[in-house]
Image (cartoon, rainbow, N blue to C red; front, side):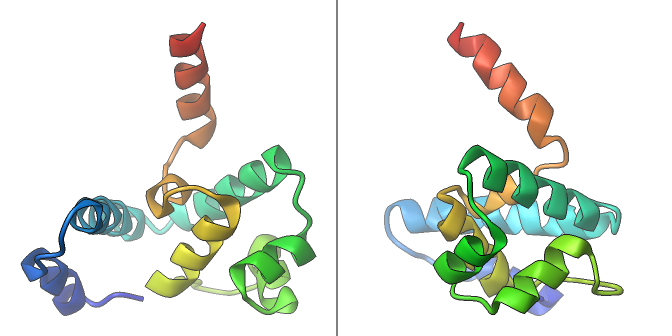
Length: 121
């Protein structure tokens, strides 16, 4: 989990090209995610939605994210009391699901998908 000091450090990083924008987006999403502990449940829902869209099983996600299968399984079953994933865990899972990390932290992913589909139609 990022500390407030680490989050502030992200503000001072001057990374070239898309990396700087990525860090800003992720920092904003990460801060808002932890501002409301109920959003932790939403993270699990978002992971499950994206797994379903990609027809991924827990084992496949864990392999792609380079995380232990039992860890991912416990995460998806919400077996962790007071679970607060760290920066690297969210990035690894997002990469495995082929999405930006901030997508995992959306509070209403289903409505976001629906609104984007409506824009396309």
